Image (cartoon, rainbow, N blue to C red):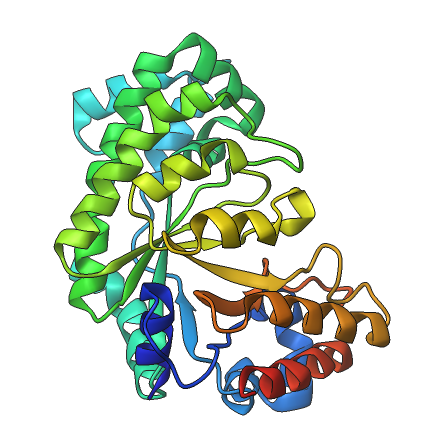
Length: 327
């Protein structure tokens, strides 16, 4: 069984030969890992990672047009983006230009040669427009201009479906919507707002990807407990992370959602990896394995490993994970 089959079976609740293993290790430790291992790829090969998190393809917006809109107003509003798109049809870039997928396609080929399950990240809706307006302004616009944001989210969903098609045509196994909704204690907005403004557009993308026979995952940091039933109803196949450190107990997952979607995570970068001394880190990893082994769980860090984690501690953790995944 290779990593593609192992991860897919785990997500779908089918039998596997062992727990699949992955980790978001590159963003902050690439230099340190490369100095010790020669490359991040060598580290991933050593620990027989079963998945690959793929970035690439075109950006959503024409950056020059977006900058011109910002320069032309004291306060960028949703209506400004809608008017630019109506007037020019070019604020949202063409997602179907094959030449912009060459690096992404090569990344998929590279990891498929190693038998890995490949998922491609794409921005969701709240997170995407945080990058346009800033999070504080977008939170205000959710209250003041919900109809305009709904129209922008619909344009984003149309773009994302086309982007997903391009990625799936190049061998991706899953489309990964990154759309941070949670703070450490709750959603950053009301559950009702989520249901009316965000859920319909996530559903459109999820239904489209499922129509292609592929899987859909959600990344949202923080506590999303208030809408987890809604996430399950959407048919999301995997959630990353199930953030225990934000009050989302594994007991709740196991009792209410383990038969509805898979989770990826378990190795917390906020409370454990790079923070705890090794004896306590080992105990924590063993505790999580004791709860989740054999479940619909892809072993992974809860986010990118942070720079305060040493390569030695990372190796210590993955030596243990490698062993426990095979027991």
